[in-house]
Image (cartoon, rainbow, N blue to C red; front, top):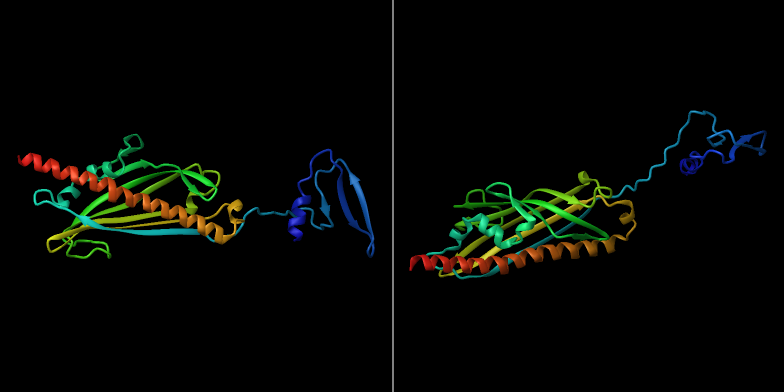
Length: 257
């Protein structure tokens, strides 16, 4: 407490009366006012003593996560299996992210996406992420949740990110974003299903203003944001991707005519 009080006394301004408290005998105080001094002292013996008031709140990082799964019927045709469709990664990306003005291809596996504004509690950020798509087959290096009998699996993950709009609020080194997903056809007899998993984790050190928000309120809002994000990705798969796969099957059928 003494450091905090001293911190408010030290930064006196020029031309304002500056107070010096000195002790004279037992329980006797004399107050001297001097305009020429630029510092205030409260019975400090060493004049070189400096006080530092830290305006930081030591809080644990706030962590939010969400996971969602896809399990829907998949109607394949012999000449246009979903495995063949997965081989065309640029087509898959364009089906999920059709706005070409907000994306660019970096190499054969990665794309940079300027995502729509994201609301994190009372903060608004504009994420820019590098998305990587990779195909794996024959059970080699499959993620743990994918059975080894699956013929081909598409992996999705974020390799780099940037949060525009938080430069003066959140230290980038205190922010972590992890996104991992899988998508694959699961054939059982004569029936096929499209299965997938998407997991997203965000962790960041709260700025002082947000640290004062009750933890239960922050958690509730954070979970809503995360759930909204993964549900949006699920809609891209269940809707846009399957619609483009149907188009892919028609194109293959027309070529055989």
